[in-house]
Length: 253
Image (cartoon, rainbow, N blue to C red; front, side, top):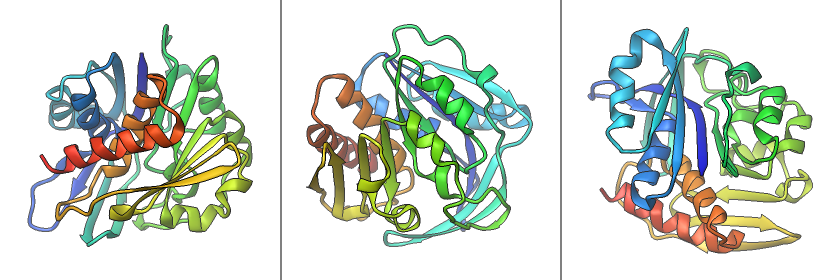
């Protein structure tokens, strides 16, 4: 069993109606293709439940909705792999008391949209007897509305509880040398070019094929597919190859 925790988001793109986003939604897109026991814990303002939750439920993985006070909201656009994002509203913070019992769960994907959402003590609670993959957004995204800002003002203690850290290139530029972070496995995603896996003092580049599609959510889908493969016994490079194939399937739909 694997679990995914994160806030849902309301995503605003030019000329389109608001749509569901965030790790729970995009992770569910990956889980729809791998058919493994999993559970998703998704949070948003109660007022947005009727709009944001059904698209996740429709994808087939069991979902528990955690009622919140606010919904993370972003407006953004892409120029190829380059994303411009504006933070319209912040989502809720998860506390250790928000974490339910997770029997038979070995891997957890934690998918923050901003640094404040999963503080160190919450990551520590999730990591007890489990392996945590943390999205690097939860380290470097400054929790302020306005143009998206990144900085390295995060609690280094959180990394002690992380088994896998997934970083996009812009996040890696903020945190520095992936091999110096003290995390067992680091996934550096490099857009349509592929990814690099750092593990056990080694690194391996995993190529991908460019697709002329909207890449929104590719990182969340990659992370979810990666821990599914690791849970199934794949090595880190093998899991990254498997995740790359799953993401291509998700984006091509």
